[in-house]
Amino acid sequence: MDAVNKRNGGAELSTVLDSQKEVFLSQKHLCPDQRKAFNDILHCRTSQMGSHSLCCDSCGRVKVCYNSCRNRHCPKCQYIKQQLWVEKLKCRLLPVRYFHAVFTVPEFLNPLFYINQRFCYNLLFECSAKAVKKTALNPAFLGVESGCLSVLHTWGQSLNYHPHIHMLVPAGGLDSDGMQWLYAGKKFFVPVKALSSVFRGLFMERLLGALEDNLLRIPEGQKELFADINSLKKESYAKMWNVYIKKTFRGAGQVVSYLGRYTHRVAISNSRILDTDGETVKFRWKDYRDNKTKTMLLACSEFVRRFMQHVLPTGFYKIRYYGILASANSNTKMNECFRLLNITREVSFYHGLSTYEVMEEIFGEEMFRCTCCKNGRMVFAPPGEKGNGP
Image (tube, rainbow, N blue to C red):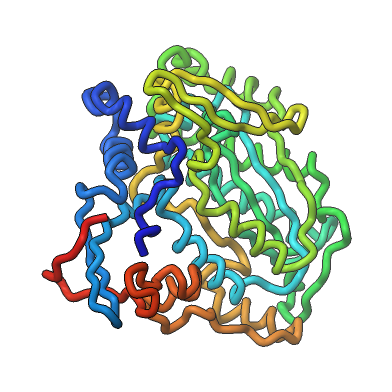
């Protein structure tokens, strides 16, 4: 059980944050969400987070373990959440092929996004999903009621600010009567240019309306652009609104495998951080221009600045379901889809298990094997039990 709190021996995000805490925590421009994420990650699995005790059910040895911060931006605190979500998703997804789409916005909108995150991220979610549902309903394309699972990412591989939506779309949907499942062909059912155009139109209509109603803060240096609605409209429609259609998933199993690695990912994992000396940090990144893995060296201050850009607003949901996949349709249209596909919905394997039992299933029984007697299991001890520190 000692391994629970053991670090991987290399550089970690918390190490880099520790080298910059005096500078960043004294700065007023960190918002409360960023400040909390900074402190949580810095103190994760240390005495600052408190502790809990584990007791061997054979020899009675008590082990004290420091608590995790459980912040969703912490690279050490996502694995169990990820596994639980993936297992639940297995029971939710329809057993069909899935298309993988990526929605982005022109780069000149990034400053506006950053200072109006909740509004702009919601807009990105809603308009991308609406574009897919609207085009899927068009009889010229597929003529079905479809849906999607959307995941927000705000970063590129070099930690640059790059808000975009990864979307999984079932290759088919319910016909107009809701009595038949219609399959799509091998290619995405809507031409990319048409989908991009619909997405851009929906997004800009909402964005321009919000600007006209003075609902958004305007970035410094862009006041002239956003003050003139006609100029902004001209600039926006002159830009490419890229929608990428990536490799198709052959079935729900591939989707679950992919999402298991992707959904609960934070801006950078500890495994990508190679080294830090307190002044600079070296990390691994993938350059998609030539599809090669490279190393980048940044000043620690710049590295932390980039990372903090990706702290989401409190309570913001970065994974969402739309259309036939929406939670509101789980017991209605989704059940009908499973019936039409002649598939029985499964119940999550972890349903009804305690936290301890779930952890045993995920990590294996050896994780809780007593390192002292080698026979007993370390189980959660009642509060007040004293033992050895980590």
